Image (cartoon, rainbow, N blue to C red; front, side, top):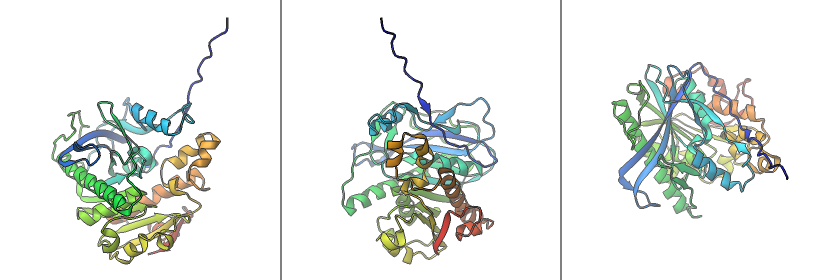
Length: 368
């Protein structure tokens, strides 16, 4: 009689923790907007949000997974079984840990098309560890895999090749961001906007400084950051990580600080027809910086996960040749330096924002 084969334990993928002095907590919210109809489902528009923040203490608290189980299965299905033997990372964010006292600047984060709100966990946790509150959104039918509390998983749908379809998609994202900002106001006043009424972390009320709000995103999420700034003056500063731009903001520009960060492959100001007209209409502080030897996904967690994956998968991911640890450190530092300057008035990272930091030589100055 043959002995049954024993399945090997999955290979555990890992992400480094943040470098800041503060422990990090997070809470997931399911938010429903009865005032808007989702163009895909025909129902009230709903979004999933993770709010990540500096925690007072994290002892003995569970850490949130990088993706919940249903979303993880859906993402693995996209890879056709190539990563089935791998366990996705656990974050360094303690689930519903009490919030550290103090009012903190608030950042909105939008992921790339077919990416998930957790795909920039490395940057989000870094910001929280240095004293920011970050609300990261999934945009159903545009984000890759969105899992709701009832177990439903909604996956991205193609939005068509036309510019009009892409403008509509980014406009929907911007409306999601504005809605979430409204719901953060509810949180700040002590309300609970979660659709299921799940418990909130102790101390969340009074922790959000909604006079200091920024937005950032990768790829299409970067376009959403610019679009929401065009619509909503509450958002005071924004960052676009290697994304084309869409909508009226391309021609109108912005009157508040904005940072563009690209790659040599993208070379936005020379090759992207949306960056040059936008750039010409920026009337406040603005910079265009470049991440050396990078690919499009060098700005997100994929750059750190790729070296841990099998060669055929790794080689198909657009992460360039930059070492993963250097990409993570440079992007973390640049995004934080920008928001430290624009929302906190701190000028100590000025060299980095001029592309002249010996500590982060991977960041190059293009123009400003």
